[in-house]
Image (cartoon, rainbow, N blue to C red):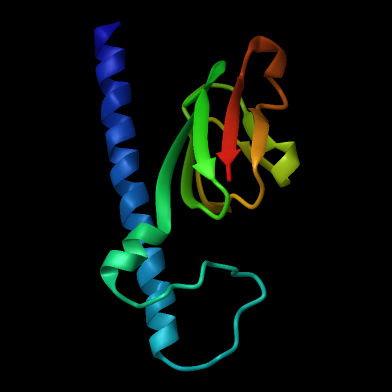
Length: 150
């Protein structure tokens, strides 16, 4: 049993590094595209406006959030945030089942095949307590909570 826990922790550590690198590269892309001129914004990309183009402020703009979907739980069970905060989310399915990451109040409903990883940006726009769950396994306790404060 300890071997599985060690392997899981190693995978989480690897995914955290991948998430951090992905956020850094994405932010560098945002900064780089601003330096090349052009005032048009793509309608598909709505990233945060950076106050200055320094690596220190870019790294502080989005916080990494790692979410594990497994048979049959979501980790972490509680996610804390504040209105206006942006997360660079890396969510992955560790289980043998297909799962979803669903937050109805925020319009999030992503499906994950076994062993699939997805990355996306999540900006917390309103305060409250929001249910996070898997549509397929909610009854089995595959739930968590997102608490957003002012």
